[in-house]
Length: 146
Image (spheres, rainbow, N blue to C red):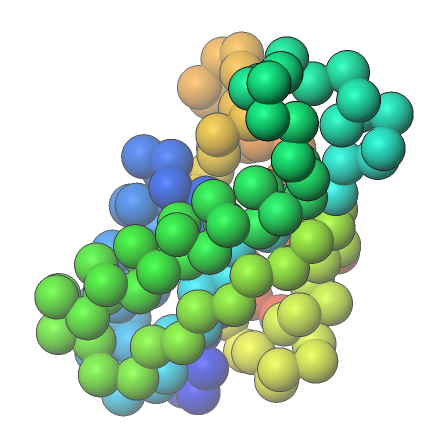
């Protein structure tokens, strides 16, 4: 059946549901689960326009990477507490859908489990979010949208 499961994780409620489903499936087929958290690279112009901590401008990419790392670690801890044995977590920068599909190809993933809508989701709940929609169109492996 499935030998390696990837679950993109952004900390949203739907990502939590997808994480739980990935854990259930991994337990059924004794497959490792890889968590992937993606953050968006910010240009220097965006960084200069940031209203966050104007007295401590810092590097927005570093802050985004740190937040993504915390999110990925949280997802890993959730799966471990649920009994998952073989869990790894990665953080990448890039366009989410393309990064997910490229990561899956590079790491020989054979199932992607992701939430129907993530943190950037807006609009009606009956529609797929843009990332889940794009992943289903780009991936050449099974994708389970939770």
